[in-house]
Structure formats: structure tokens, C-alpha cells
Image (cartoon, rainbow, N blue to C red):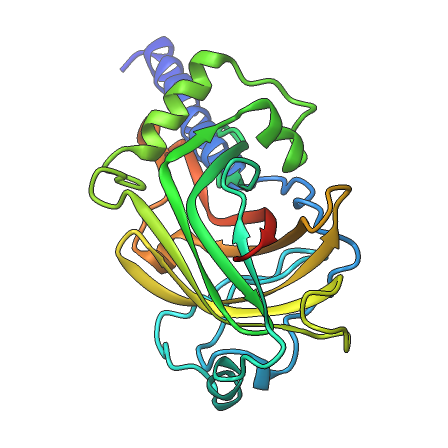
Length: 284
């Protein structure tokens, strides 16, 4: 072996090592995502869900959003606590409301699990809903209406400073609604059965203030407990009130695999941040 050939072999070996280190470094860098500021909840809504007596017995399966709520989406134990069962039977003084479908919305902040991925804001509508403040109710979501990166959605979840092209937004929506994620053809609706929604600030049912909401969410064919705090406000329209709340939940708790592309180089985060804004009118 000549000296020149030996030198070239050493150089090639160094080059291979450098390339391998670069590839490993890239994958490590791509996985170390800088978390953006969470979607800011209403500042008047408490940071915690309340004491254990007010919650369903399942353990929480997702971290609390900074300054917001954590959805109680444990993978087991769907039985309600004794106090919830008792409260769900108490309808004295409850105020019945119908959902204004045209004006009510739910917004979802979808994070990225990798640096190459993008953050998205999703806007969804409801099919029907009725709530009795001081008692319970039911909300039915139209999953086929969920649309990625509308201007309003990105504003509501704090992403208005970054731009997403219409073509990319369309692709994200198609992937989200498709069989690999929400599969809206098989699961066209999601339902939140409210076991009890009760005042927590000593206000009368129907009066403005903070309310504890306990119930069960059925999504993608799976049911999980869901509890959070919501804020009730009057609007400038006579008799119309606004109920808003925010919480975090994990897709995997409902059997949904977070979407990924490019061999996993771009991947959606498991945890979602959700904000609901519901307009309610007195029930008949």
C-alpha cells in the first residue's frame, strides 16, 4: 500500500465519521423543539381544575397548559366521583340554554414534535348543543367542519404572526380529516356529555363567573373523562351569554396517532391545546 493511498483512506474514514456525526446531530436537533408560548387562556379562569372531589376518578393523562386547564383524559376509570353523581341529579335553579350554532366555535392549537414541523391553528363548528347551567347538557361537534389555519383560528391560538400558504393549509386539513387521523367518514361527530356544570364563585346558576365543567368526551370512537373550568360572560345582546374555556388533551388518549411526514422528520405533537367559545341563548 502506497503512502498516498493510505492517506486517502484516512481522509475518507474521517469524512464518513464527520457525515455520521452530522446526521446524528441533525436528528437530535430536529427532536429538540423549542416550545412556543401556550395558547393564553382567560386570565380570570383558575389555573387548577379544583379539588379531587370535583373530578372524575381517572388520573389525568396530559400536562396542564401554562395558565390554563388540563383535560382529565385518563386511559381508565370512566366512573364519575360520588359528588359528581349527586350533583348531576340536582337541577334546582338550573338555567337552560340553547347553543347558537352559527356563532359558536372551537379552536385547536396543534404543535410540532420536531423542529422541521409547523404549528397550526384549527377551527371547528358544532352541530347541536344544549346546556343547563347548574345541571348538565350535551355538545355535538361537526368533525368534518374542522379546517386548518384559517385566519381566525391562527389568531385565536396565538399564531397570527406566522404565515401559512393556502395550499399548505389545504393539505393539512385533508391529512387531518383523513383516515390516518380523525377519519371523519367513520367518525363524523364528537360528543361531549356534560354531567354537571356548576358555579364555583357562589354565583347563582346563569350568573356571570367561573363554572366547573365535568363530563365525558367521545372522540374517534373512544370515551374519556374531561373536566375543566369555564367562564360565563354577558354579551351586548339581551339574554345572550358567552361560555368559554380552555384545556389540554392528548390525541393518543383517544386512539389517534399524531400525524407525521417525511419519515418522521416532521411530526405533530401528541398534546393539543383547545379553546371553546360558545354563545348561548335562553332555552324554551
